[in-house]
Length: 224
Ligand code: DX5
Ligand code: ZN
Image (cartoon, rainbow, N blue to C red; front, side, top):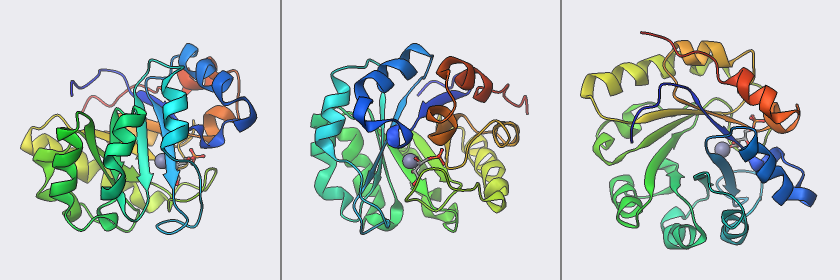
């Protein structure tokens, strides 16, 4: 995946008005969103239930930006094909939710999607160190997954820099995505530490107009 000069913004529809989901998706696309983040939760891996492949398929029909699908489900392997068919472009799984992460990531790519791994705040970089070749995206969670609008966990910040260093050292084109509590206050310190993509739910959908908030979140990248 080609590294972009600018930070990419991936609004999470979890904070959208579900009674007007189509309009909301079109509005963030028109406002400059780069990806659209879709949070899939099963009430088992995380303490909340959201949406599945049918909603992904519906959203696919009305937008051209890549669908960034974040699986917070226990039996991720069982559903990879379903999400591909629904139109996912980037499919991200949690290492704890699959028995053989390497196999899962290669399968995601084999199906024609970009492969991502999401690390919970307490999960170390060791979880992905030996599967970097299979990854297009590493998502660092800065909240415990499950709900929008939670407070940013500051103690994860050093992990962003450590991951940047690891990726630069191996020289792969892996994007660092940060998910949870990203807002105009936390965005600059994440960019400084080397993040590439910001997921933002409440910060975007709670603060229209969307073009302004997306512009604000797209802070300058660090030059280091
Ligand atoms: C958390 C989800 C996030 C969430 C982000 O479990 O993975 O994508 O929607 O919401 P905010 O940006 O409000 O923290
Ligand atoms: Zn997410």
